[in-house]
Image 1 (tube, rainbow, N blue to C red):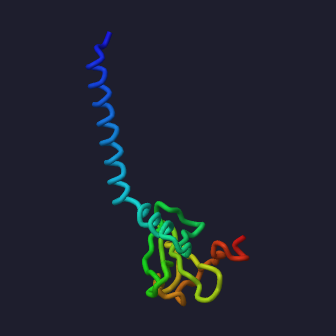
Image 2 (tube, helix red, strand yellow; image 1 turned 45 degrees about the vertical axis):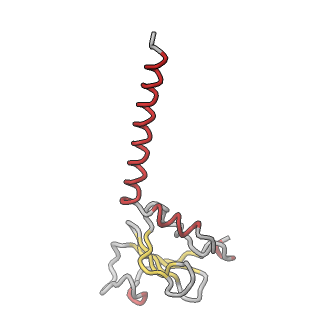
Length: 127
């Protein structure tokens, strides 16, 4: 039979190891994913930030923000696609990273030769 004092010590050691593992996981996620950045923008309150349906909260990265006071992105990317907002239209566009466009530039929409469109979340087309 284990003495009560030793059982408490064993529990404390296990708890310390679990907390250390959790802290390490949280730390590593901050360097290996876009999770915290995306969560911040999603929770900041205006509701204008979104992650494209073709991407995910772990890998979507904003590469150019709106220069004004809004919290939306103009250009973004993940492991498979580049994304851009489509001017005045209630859509965003996306293109594969491995596209075959001549002189492709991720920040110049006129070079996106094989782009596809998707409706913005919350728009009539997106419902």
